[in-house]
Amino acid sequence: MSVYSKVRFKVIGLPILILLVSILLFMYFVKTKSVQPPVEVKEKAWLVETMAVKFERLSPVQTLYGKVESFALVNVAAPVSGVVDKVWVREGERVKSGVPLVSMSLEDLDIPLQQAKADVEDSDAQLALQVLANKANVQRLTHEQRVLVLKETKVERTRKLIQKDLASQADLDLVKEALEKQKYVVVGAQLAVEEAAVKIKQAKARLVKAKALLAQARLNRERGLVTAPYDARITKVAVSEGSRVATGAALVSFYGLDSLELRAKLPVTILEAVQSAMDSGISLEAFYQLGAERISLPLSRLAGEAMTSGLDAFFTLPASLSHLRPGDLMEVRLEGEHFDRVMAVPYSALYGQNKVYLVQEGELRAQSVQVLGDVLREGRLWALIRSDFNEGERISITHLPNAVTGLKVKEATE
Image (tube, rainbow, N blue to C red):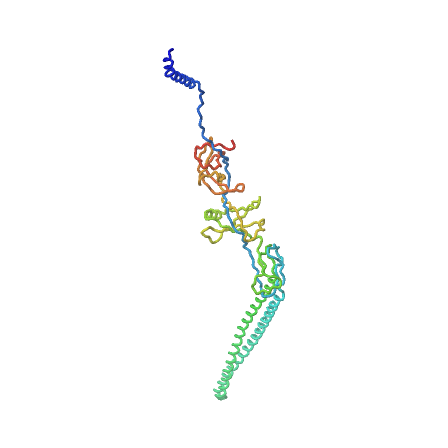
């Protein structure tokens, strides 16, 4: 090969050869490369907790807040002015029926009693005196009336004697004058009888008044020793031994242990239901949770006056809550009328006001429900719902922000 041919091969042939080898190598690598399987895209399944549909007979509950009161709070006042002799109790003490609480000085109580007894005896004596005087006046009137008849007879006799010329006109004038005087005496005697009758009525009235004052004095003496009329708790002791008090001054205050009740305001939203239940004779109760114990408080009555914020309801406190005091605040839950074929679900299962999601074949299915209120489960409030569920269906209780019908889910128990 000539030098020219070698040079031409290097300039033209060598690049072409390299290009052909490159093409052959590319075709070889394309034919011999490994084939990757196609990537399968799967839809994400959201993990949710579920609960089975199980129908029950339940009542909705309403949380209420109220204050303990007493309908038998007694404020004892001093019956008379005087000195406090004994004070047996202190504020906050619990006392039994018949136990003495406070006593006034007996001297201050006995003096008005003795005065009242004396007034009764005096009034009784005055009445007896008036009766005797009236008896004498009646006898005097009878006597003066007889004398009047005699004088009238004497006048008629004198007139007859004049007709027979046996008496003069002067004699007739004298007997007439005596007759007029006697008539005046009879009028005075009659007035004395009538006046005595009025005085007897006055004496009787004074006697009745004196007896009433005596009864009041005896009652004040009894009230001077204050005793507990029933089992009670002392709320306030306003005096101490040796205190001088005026009539009507406060001595001690207490309330009956069986008079405690809870006053709580019912919201306007449940007033109609509560009133309807009471009108139908249905007994409603509220429940107070004291540790592990669930205590019932029956609804006794509703207040007589309503306000725009609601109506006050009164619940009877049982003996197990007698340790509470007026003014204590309580949180209770009022149970309403019972409903059949309903179920309770956590509020996390509820979407909006009327929708939950069922889990069917790994997907969510929306279901409309009616919310009837709240129920208490394990110390938490759950929603009480009603719908045309089938027993045993599964409800999602995990709240998903993107929940829609058809969303893939997986139960946490799977």
